[in-house]
Length: 295
Image (cartoon, one colour):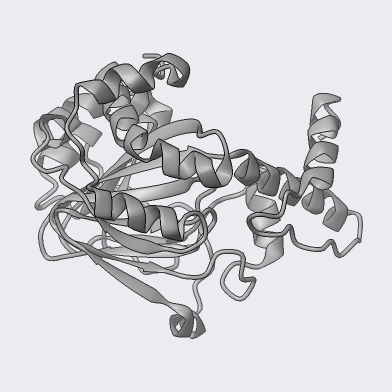
């Protein structure tokens, strides 16, 4: 189950697929990327690879580390990983309407048909992405299957991300990326050094929230490390997250890694700059230490 080759695959895949994002959506994305969250429209509806039975089969094909599923009746903030319901992943997906669960299938590009779908979608936006942040690196796909009213708790992610709603509805609540009020610098540093992505929720955060209601045909762009949580609507839901990295996002990550080492030694390092700051000195220093196996 190898990921598709981005160097040879883009043109061949796009030549045979209709557009999912229209010109208006691509223009809106280009204007806002990479730092401004915004809503988009898409035409990815009733795709055979995104039906429940197909997703249950996919879950059984993926390696264990690429599948996560938990109870859905969760608070916005959790301390550590939430518990399971006792169902298998396939049963969770096939019976998601009443399973009280949420599930995520990670790195679905490991299966060639899903890898082709991912590159189809990202290929439509490749020009807009690379004009701003350079080469599109590490394309990955994640599929979320959620029971009615399920909550995905407050967290952040290191990728540039577009979440496409396929069936059902949900509300994603986002907070400004890089703002230490919502995710302190030490928490960023811990995550980039192997810590959890779950964040501590405080009711005072609500004043900085921006809500994005999503139904079939809606999508939302999530900037790198923008804290967010998701609350599912009254019906079960399927969403596809298409993600990628950039040299800028990797530099931000590695600069945070170096800051973690500095903080452990009693320093109070300055947070990395957001885009388009390069963070190169800290990033290259950390990469050198990693190459020498000193971290």
